[in-house]
Length: 88
Image 1 (cartoon, rainbow, N blue to C red):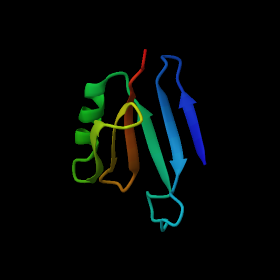
Image 2: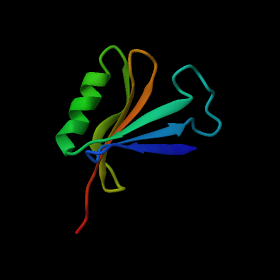
Image 3: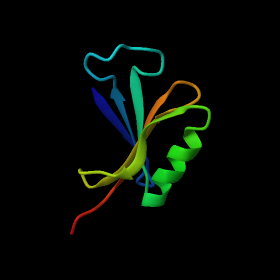
Image 4: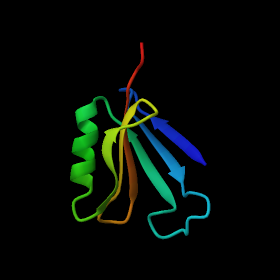
């Protein structure tokens, strides 16, 4: 399941549950997915949130026209950070 919370300034946080057949552990039963306003922010958020945690997908350009990275923070919370590249 997925959900989204959009703020008045246009920022959006997405939430998603765990992957099929993935054992549920504290922190892995949901993911906070943050969409940021520029490419550099993806790299910055992944680096800063992963201190004492673990990067599960290094920030980089993807095949789905985004810059994306994921991590588990020091509290065991899963994060996905994304900048959506708009195609003209």
